[in-house]
Every structure is written in structure tokens, then in C-alpha cells.
Image (cartoon, rainbow, N blue to C red):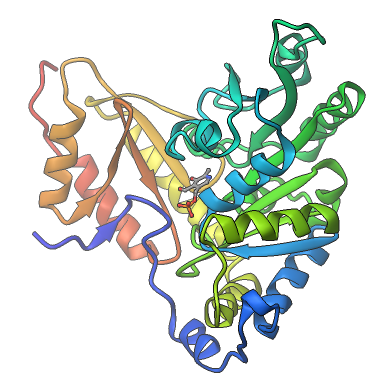
Length: 345
Ligand SMILES: Cc1ncc(COP(=O)(O)O)c(C=O)c1O
């Protein structure tokens, strides 16, 4: 059956008519020459919003993260991050490949780190040890079921990094989901981070692109690394216009995605084929399949009903987004409740 309700990721959204119109009318130039005014507008809009000095538009969140890691480390350094981190698990080993750094993995609560977890893992100066030079946080945490940090949790991590001389980077692929969920303001973020990566193509609903925010000096370096990575784009203002449109129209509505995710979690919790559902804070629902049932089988049965979900490890992940309506949520819940996967229970 054709997929009607696509919960695989918030990356599957299509541009709306309004977004397409904004893209079509964008004023563009050659951005490698620094001549695309729409790209400049997007970079300035986000850097101003987050109170950072400058921004750099890149093709993907993987690229903005990896450029930041390269800017903030030297070969033989060590990056500290949670074991669930996208930068470690899902970026093709890029930290080793691009930056020749090692990684120290921590076990946060659904990917959320604390100064108490980080401090003992920072290496003292010693010939045997890699130099701990960077901490990476992810907000929201994808593999943590969309768990989010608020700024009160981030501030002491920033203080620790400052005292110990480490840089702090934020993988903010879904930072606007975190802002909507916590009520924190973007303008208060800049003071805590050396780099912030923001994806336009997740919950914001743009087709392509991420922006790296940092100091002017870091962005100068990042621009050179982007070129070497093959990420210098020409008339990319057509894509940047989609990002600007998304920032103007698609942020507040994320609260709806969060309500949808909570409704799905509430429907899933009592079912016999569900062992547990991670607490839902934003637009991601991850549930553990009960013993005796198979995640692959559940995904297959849902696909037969036109509902697409993804495996995450041995769990199932559902992501709500711009292209999921309340009617679709009702329809999905109806199917999820009446699903009868084969199992022992
Ligand atoms: C938390 C997180 N960071 C970074 C990325 C990378 O984004 P991209 O797919 O644009 O490379 C993703 C993608 O899903 C993500 O979930």
C-alpha cells in the first residue's frame, strides 16, 4: 500500500506553496563569491536571532557539525559527547576522518549531559592522554526521544568548559523544537556556545540546508573548510529563501507537532506490544517493543496500513512534522490501537 502517513522523520516534508513562492522570487548571486544576498540575509537573520557574530549556510547538518568540530579541534584531540550523539553515531565516522580526533562517550539521561558527568572525563595534561578540547551537546536529542536541555542546564556546562579551556558546540538540528518546548529564547543561546548548528530541513520544513553560527573568526575558518568539503554553493539563495520562510512561518506551529507526539505516546503506552515509551517532550516518540514481539513485524504491519515508521536500534521511532495533520494522527492512532502483531502475549 502507498504510504499515506510518513512518520519516518521530520526530514520528509515537502515545501509548501508559500515556501515555493518565496524560493522562486529569491534574489540570488554566486555565494562562493559572497554575492548571494538571500544567503547573507538568512545567515544574518539566524546569527542575530541567536546573538552570535556570524553564520554560514551549508548543505547539511552533518556538514555544519563536522566543520565546527574541525574548527574547534586539532588532530590527537578528544571530543566529549553523549553515546547517543548524532555527531558520533550517524555522521559516517566524520570526527575521525575529517578531524583526526578521538571521542569520549558519556552516558547521559536520554542523551542529556551534566557537568558532573563531563568533568571527570576531561583529561589532565599528560603525555599519555589525548587533549580534551571540545564538548558537543545535542538539543533536542534525536536518539533520546527528543529530550531537551533548557538553558539552566546548559549554563553550568558552559562554565565548566570555560574553566577547563574546552570549546562547546551545539548540534541544534532541532533547536527550535527545544525552544518551543522549554520557552527559552534563542537570543540567550549565543553566550553559551562557540558553535551552533541549526537544521532548516527538519522540523522547520525547508528542503535543504543548515547554518553554522559562531564568531566571525571561526566562520572565516569554517568558510574555507566548507570549500574543502565541497560545500561551497553558487545561487543557493533559492534554498536560503526557503529557510527564511520557514523561520517566519513554521516555528510557533511546532507546538502542534509536540501535541501530536504526546497523543501518539498516550495511545501506544497501554498496548500489549509496547514495553515502554520514552517520555515525550517534543516531536519524537520512541517506544520499546514488548518481549515476544518483533519491531520489524510491527513496522511491516503499519506500512500495510499506509503508516511508515523507522527502527531506531531495536526500538521504533515515530516523528511528527509539518506534513502530519490532526486527521492523520487520529487515523494513525486508530490503526495503532487495532494492530495485532503476532507475539506471545
Ligand atoms: C540530531 C541531528 N544532528 C544532525 C543531523 C544531520 O543532518 P543532515 O541530515 O542534514 O546531515 C541530524 C539528521 O537527522 C540529526 O538528527
